Image (tube, rainbow, N blue to C red; front, side, top):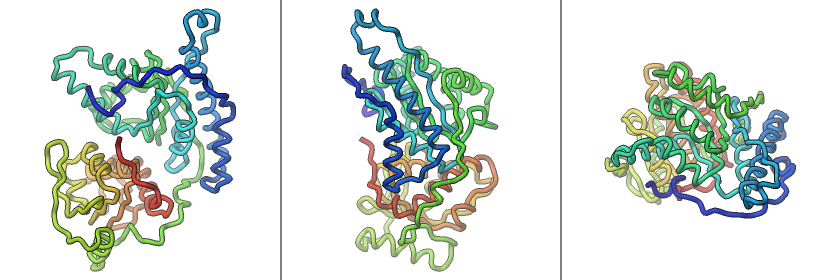
Length: 388
């Protein structure tokens, strides 16, 4: 039904997997020796859980690939429990997830940002309703299982009631079909969707998750993103003063070979998103257009896909009354970060002071951490990632 998503069925394979004993620890130590990361005991504890899951997952996969006659002569391995890792921002959860995912040799796997996944889920259910199909959730779960046995989510969080109401039924079906899920999050499952509408319906998902997944906390006291050396080139300018316009104009002209700043529109899902300007893979837009107007994940993913650099002007200090704008900004930065889009912006206050009180201010800590990392030389040297 949907092209270029997990709904396309992966080819069946029957291969012998290599010995992976201690594999993640070796990869971790290699990163340490290359000074890409710092050794952290809390990360090692979480890494050991991921290593155990990797070994169990391959044992199950090897068993399932055996002919029926050999299965009868072999002991069936224990079912893999999923894994949910939570902890503060910048503690290395995504880095560990990447180590695990890259080392896992099975073909039927997918790593995806939760926002992207839910967009695909809602698109699938919408198509089914248009076709007057029944039992949408079981059908969706079977499609996912046909394509993947391992599903990895970075930065799992729930803020949308439509997502909250579907998760319990969907993941109940996925777990029953044997899909193994690895999630990272800033919150313990019991703290997800706090204060959300009809949260009682979301409690079913929490119960399912706690029954099917091992839940561990990455207890590291340090936000490692704060260690990034800032770039020699300033990309986050504050406060908003008489030099702000000059900052934006100099950067835009440098990146576009002095192309004039003229309004342009970007077509997303049949509607226009008005940009202050765009040239090649560089876009310029105001905070108002991006986060005050009613844009969402689909818009941000399209922007992140089309442009390798985004310039945002006039980011204000966000108050509790601007919680919707703060929520959109979080979703926008998530999309930019996942696609490694370079961000140049002007703001009223430093990133650490953008949104300190109000609904979602705890989750906003991840955004602050990412904003700081996005100013680093290491991030600015990372290639832009486009959707396939």
